[in-house]
Image 1 (cartoon, helix red, strand yellow):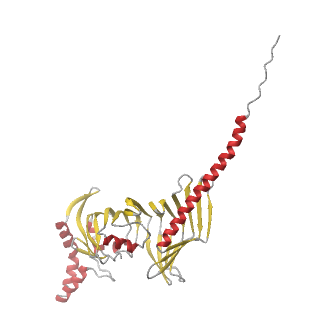
Image 2: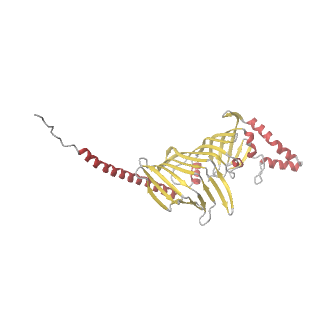
Image 3: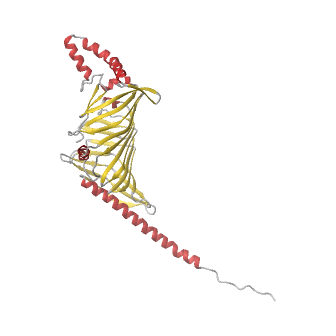
Length: 375
């Protein structure tokens, strides 16, 4: 006799469990997103409050939050910044800012700023206008414990407008600045490292040397800060001076055409807020750099050699011109005599002291000018 298999009921509980699990997971993920968004929003608000205590008020014409389900995004349309100091007030405006954070890293923000950026005094037309191809920012840490901040700008152009006249102040292929906490904490004896990277930069108002494109890679360390609470920059430098702190130039490399310079050393601050100390500078192809350091006369700032030549002309007309024509080779020979031969990237170079004496700067015996006080 043929036996028939007994039919068994199909197990349906896995499908039921899955049907229940999916909405639970979705609800949990949504809750996690809103929790992370709340934390990220708190970080931004904390940063705004911190900035406000330093006299910098950040506002947006409108804000929107998005990025669900994997990111948190804050878009700020027509952002403005009011900067208040003891003697003036500035209004800074841009077109758009987008900040975003990953769900699993709500204290790490990446963002992008859309130009143009304008700087003006309240009620006045813009005096500084800046634009770029792309500007990105990154911030890590909490407002009370910042860890690292980066600003990177591709093809920046800064211009000053005086009435109908527009003058270009600064251009570059790339500008990047990085600040990070090296030692200590934001509340107790922080040691801050600041790096600046410039590619194909031109800044004609800065110095005659900067009228031609140059690259720069500079890293400095600030020691002597008591804390990292919100304070104006001059007050921070005053704090460094009062505590006997320093500005250490860990490395500085500048290249312009065939001329390459490297420097390192430590600088202090005088009671008047001026730089004081000495850096060791090594320069390859120094001869090409000398004209920009003061051997050629500028209409608005006569070089030291020109002043000396004028005195010679008073003694014997024409003698000053002879001095001008022979000053370059004589000065170069003197620098080679007092400098130390070194090598930079396979090129012969000369190491010289770059001295800061209460703000007055000189390269070996060559006076370069004076640096403005930092406070």
